Each structure stands twice: as C-alpha cells, then as structure tokens.
Length: 172
Picture (cartoon, one colour):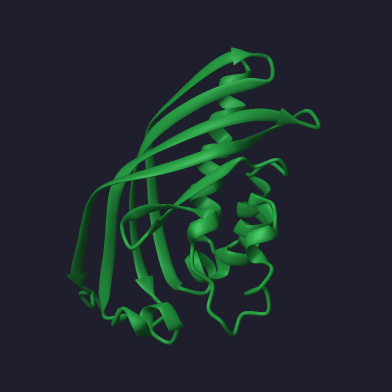
C-alpha cells in the first residue's frame, strides 16, 4: 500500500530533523490541528501543555492559551533545538496501520543519544554536562491524518523504557 511508505518517511523525517537540529522540518511533521504531543521531559511523558516555560519567556502569560502545535513550536527550542548540541536517533520496527485513506496509526522503537549544550538553562538547572552522552530508549505511538493531501502527525506519545549516562570517549 503506497500510503505506508509515505507515513514511514514522516516518522524518519521526525528523527533526522531532530538530529540535524532542523526545527522547521521537524515542526512540519506535525499537523496544524495537532491534538496532543507527549514529550520526553527528563524521561517522563509530559503533554506539551504541561511543559514548563520560564517566567522570563515572552510567552509566559499566554502560552497555555495557544493551540497545541503553537505551544510545541514555542517550546521546542528548550526541549530540543537549543538544549541539544549533538543528537543521534535510531528509529526501528516501524509499524503503520492505515484505517482509511485519511487516517492511520503507528508505533516504533527508538534509541536517542545526545550531547547537551551545557549553557542552556535546563542543562544548568539539572547539572547536565557536555562531557557525557545522555541516552533514552523506548517507543513512540503515532496518529496520522491527511492535511492538504499530505500525511501529518495529529497525536504523538513517547514511552521511555531506559535512560543511561555515559562519559564521552575522545577517539582521536
């Protein structure tokens, strides 16, 4: 079925754009009508509406009133794009189930290694250092719908099974 490779490619684009720190491509994976995004914040699933925003953020007073995709766009720098210095994700065992021509669900397993930006406020607050690799492993659960003729993510959930920290080795 032709739809499954298109949707699989969307899942892969999610991982690659995160690793390449390509915020616009990453946000493009999600529907303008995103219903829910459950992030991996400190290894725990947290709906995007509950992801903290610092009091000095210009959106502090209004962010809770924005639709989920706009909240995600406002918060993704702190979650990913300014917090991570280097990322490496592996997504495997992608399983897509197409229920009709405009709706599908999916799941996969993932492994994500990252080196953090130690100057980012979250990394400072959590005492994260760029001399370590931080690892998470788990599964993603997806819901997809067609939007303007293209597949987009309407619901996303992450379940963390394992986390690990390893000291970086200089291989040079």
